[in-house]
Image (cartoon, rainbow, N blue to C red; front, side):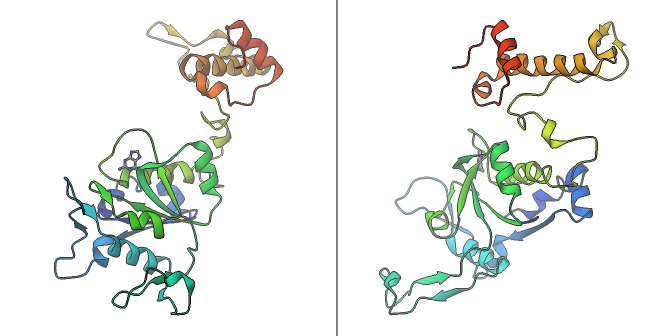
Length: 269
Ligand code: 6GU
């Protein structure tokens, strides 16, 4: 999987990708990450990447041209002048002809709080692609023409506002990389993670069996695999009901799950 990240702050990505699972996936060749500094594609001596919003109001808006040119260069999408005989030249004028880009070779994702919500299902969907382009918006916004005529998708990582899409891009790279074959060690299977099953994970314990007088649940020390598995399933269901009942409604539940949940007072909605 190759990630192309378009940002004004490529240095932000140095730390998070140089440790742990992402670093290992990089050196194992499971992923490649290329950051592209949008400023390098801005014209003029000062390489300005933002401008005042039409219609006034506070804040600055990222200009479309440097973003279009950065993405087109990286993805080798040539933008050619539309032929005069084509119907799609309706908006073209003498001074500024309409340009048509070659089709996007991969999803071009604009990161913004207005995007569709990112979750484990979206991560799995993105993991099915060979390449992803991630555009990190900054300032108060990005010129709408990036959304309309360059991006093929728009994603938000949650209902809060970040200063830019960079942290969101890191979140997506991490969540997607974990799902790629070979990215995790043997022990950790992504299928077991919270959310992968549609439920929250059961509690984990390791040695010692008693720590400051706090004990590991007896059943985990029993060595009885069947009872351990049942305890874990019950704890997973109990925890999901207590913390995220919204997830239960969508989870894949068996007959025994439903019987157990009923003892906790839950009925399938
Ligand atoms: Cl993708 N970008 C920004 N700026 N803020 C966000 C976000 C993205 N997702 C949640 N908040």
